[in-house]
Image 1 (cartoon, rainbow, N blue to C red):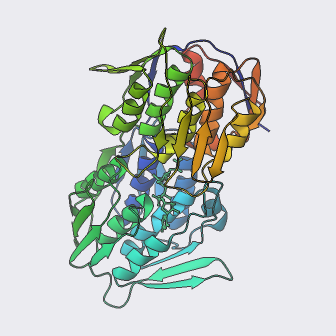
Image 2: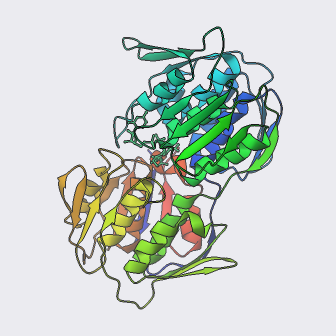
Image 3: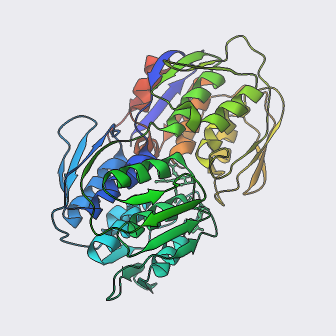
Length: 425
Ligand code: EPZ
């Protein structure tokens, strides 16, 4: 079983380049189902989740050329199956992002219900509400844990859809389906994450007519057909935040290149509250936590532009090491404190009132321990904690980390971290 071993590493120093965003590349790839023409996606990170998405698309009939590093050339001349592969869907929830484009292109999509995961039950009711609003028929087969969505004889028809929660995935799925629907679709209370804007930009390059993506009301005029495109994914804002926190927790200084400051404003603002110095420069974001008295602050995760839920666990790891107590509130997922038990193995003494609020006493000298990655971001949090803990921290279940961080160990090593990956894949 592969593991990551981290020793106390002292202050990190140097520069690091952020990769393309996982949570952008996955919907960008799914959107290529909408056309039979060639799409070229650039700045694609080498991640397990990207490999799974490629496998899923190949089963639908996609022809993929990924011979060039970081570039995926993909076209789907014809759909040979509209059924999601159960094993692949179980492996990666983002498989459901292929439902909207498949519905629009082929008129039918069959998807095994994606399992919940450690951070929550992850329902898809809002996705299905959107498909129904566009005139599709949804059949849920609970016994076989399958959902079938098919368009009626008149195809998809635009309509107004209100999302009870600004779900990122539901916004993306409905957005993709609406591009080929007849008439106008309005998505109200839409998610505003940068990945939504990135997806809309690619779809508009393909000939879609989408307006005001990035606001809470997105307007889509349906078109007959979509063409191919060349599109570069935005940099990963959560990886950017993770490296901001790697400098902060080790009291080091790092220049983060290829980051978009506007996508990490809430993370930078919270770190400045902790007295970390952050300077946005033409060559990148420079973060400096050397020789400074860092202080605690409270966190509350919210949909964009609030503090992203994905940075909550790495930020909590950092808060265990600063003077003063913090309250961390998780409002997006119902069970995203699984890392608390793991951090407490290292001496963090965190208490949780319920699954939505944790109290971090702070001022701790963490010690190494055997811990596990409970989800992708929690895994990153354990690595950060290991960098400052005394002795060695051994992290298992690191497949979570490798789903979403490209060459995380290599990048940290280049910044001076004493870290290694052991064991077979
Ligand atoms: C996306 O997941 C991201 N994944 C997640 O990143 C991220 O944490 C999340 O958005 C929130 O920002 C990808 O983009 C691949 P949601 P998604 O739908 O779309 C509830 C990571 O670490 N909900 O915005 O699944 C849901 O249960 C991953 O990279 C419904 O109730 O998130 C949750 O409580 C983890 N019904 C909340 O909305 C629905 O139909 C937010 O979920 C859909 C969602």
